[in-house]
Length: 429
Image (tube, rainbow, N blue to C red; front, top):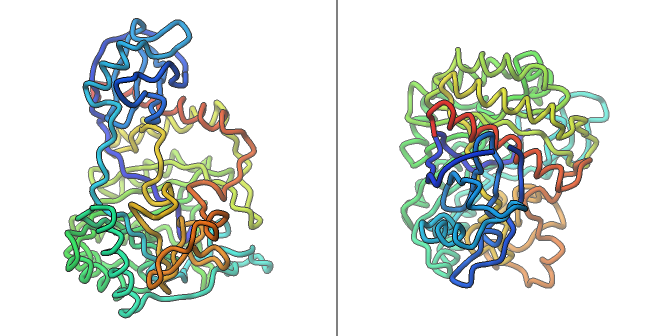
């Protein structure tokens, strides 16, 4: 995907607050809100029934619970909920930084058929599906973006900035990336991360961007080499990209302090190669600098369909891949609570914004650069809510799944419970 969905970078081992142990399965947090403060349900907490005990996964961390902390139907007892609140487990860390996503280039040098920025499939069956309109970040637009950002930060009372360099492929405009980071440092302490296909990343560029505040890069793999080279292909020549990406990551790792999130896309096209991919990446990269993130691709409505369902078999595969990754020295994404996206979860752009290369505002990555989905511009600000109401898309709203929300939640619970049990059993928790 030329503009893959981003994920919060978690680290494992996960810090846990112990309360005790016993039991097996999954349950949703219920129970009455405690009048002394926010309830577990209201803060997006999850209760997972593990092999030997219950796991509480909340905005303040992970806690181990014993049977006595829950009612017979799997709800938190008021005393347990108070204890979790008093220990900070129901309290999310305050928002400290404004989350600014900027598309430095809407063009991409790859031709992945499932990218959500495609407007249709390539009818010729090649590597050039039609995409959103081409636009490139300029110095004048950077000034407008940062002036807008300064106003938004002041309104929210924030004094730090976290930038996501996005595309298309952001490194098709390396000057724009560098200028944005250089100038951003003038308005607030700033750090940055990037979603890139890494085909254009050189050691010199990695060093330069790291020196300007870039801390990590997310790169996608579509299964092992053969599958990846059939799917993530060059737009110009239809050629494979696997070896070039791995080589560029390895060289950039040697040349800079960058860390990596390696997103592994899971579909019917890649499923059989994931086990070999994990071993191959461990052999060719430094696992200590990498987080592996496994993600089933959602359908985006432009002719691509993922026939894999969130079944028990798929949950078992995710568990197997995570355990193998941990054994090889990788970090894996940590289980978290249900939470609102800091960028698209607030319709007034309170804590973050998505800006296309021409300065137009979108609510989320999925709609950036798409006609008729603009929610404003950096020069004029957000449009009135009456206009943006039907254009404000949040995370996952454009993806279609053949299963309902309960099935998706059950899948996530199974995978996360197995991970927490494994970390506990192996002394990593």
